[in-house]
Length: 231
Ligand code: DX5
Ligand code: ZN
Image (tube, rainbow, N blue to C red; front, side):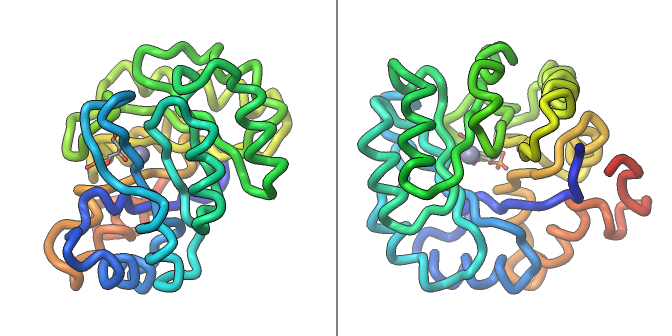
């Protein structure tokens, strides 16, 4: 069942010179989780954040930390980010030879596990692990960079995953990541998403704008509506 909409700001779009302050600011602004994009320059063409930075940020917020691992091979780093204080570890099926084993290991370590599907990765990749995951993430851009445009074909994929999750009877979060803004957020929610990653759209306008940005993305702001009916 679709749950109330939550917003996870991606700190990829934050000011890296003031990361702790930025995490505190979005926490105070009403964010529901902190999304941390981890890139290795190999699985994706960019380099970002290591576990030491997650450890350093941990004391700046009580919100759940989501580590979105775009690294291969992933298992060693999944353990390192768990130890650094991430609450949820999100992995791509292509990032290791044994997705099911990777997810079991994350859960055995006491953390939540999520699976991320690239734009060209079929929904079937999530079916084999639907009894095990806590979250399915739809990549609505190709992973590697913030600030890209939402790929339209992913709305249909969100809807198909919503049906699969509902049929499973499990409380699995359906997260969408990439190109979320005030136009695409309501459409992703209408398709069945209940957790939205938002980098650029959150971290715009300076810290005094973050609360309003988050409220509008969630659908209870001044974007002309009372928010989505589907819950
Ligand atoms: C892309 C990342 C996304 C990205 C989102 O690889 O997984 O989390 O930073 O950025 P925006 O919201 O700017 O599209
Ligand atoms: Zn991400």
